Length: 348
Image (cartoon, rainbow, N blue to C red; front, top):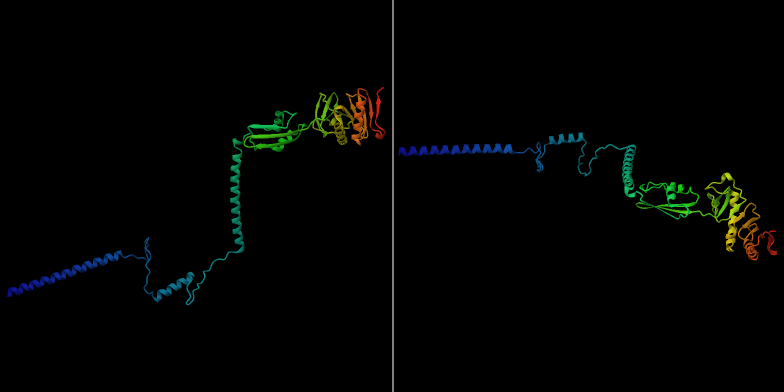
């Protein structure tokens, strides 16, 4: 019995030891877990974690903390909510003066102007580069309207050459150069892109001549001196002119008095052509505007025309005498009273 009681006592002792050790082991494990949780706790105030929002602290704040925060807010001028009102105090900002505003506006305007001008310059530069490219080099020069003046001479006068850039030519300068030739009345120059120039001219025509030494000066109906040559054309010769010899040059015009008389000569020629006798007139003396004298060389007759009044009637009388006095040399007088008829004087 004693042995059994001892054995039971020993068993109880070991059981108590086992339970104590188990408890100690549990305590150690709990301490280790607490250390690990402490180590793994994140301090949201001092650390920043990407992707994790800050967990609001719902703990009631102490009065001391509130006071200190209020003092900090007052120092920093942070707007606070008024009790019972939804309005906030506005933060004090610096006011901009009118002068500063004007300066800012001026700067903005300048920037806009700079941007616009630079853009325009870039565009213009590109256009100039394109227009001056070899695509627009002249390959053809066409000349129309010329009869007396050769095409090559007109092109030479213009100063335009093949392989020149079509936009680099001076049209006004070329026109003036071509018009240096007295035969050229007007010039039109046009561009036919990409490589052709068209020159259209209108020439003056010889209608009269004047004697100049052993040569003749060709005139048009505007009194321009077109050419001085030895060749005699089948045109009426004007005699009795007032223009001085030193003023007789190609491209010049007759003096003012001769130009006024020339207008009346054109009326005489128009009336003569209407009666088909204009080609008979070989010479016109314009010295006296009250009595123009016509020379009909082939008909061997001279006409004392008088002034330019009643030209159509005078021409009818001239035609009648020419038909009646064919191949008879003499003088026709139509500068008298035509109501009594015209007069023909035979040369004795």
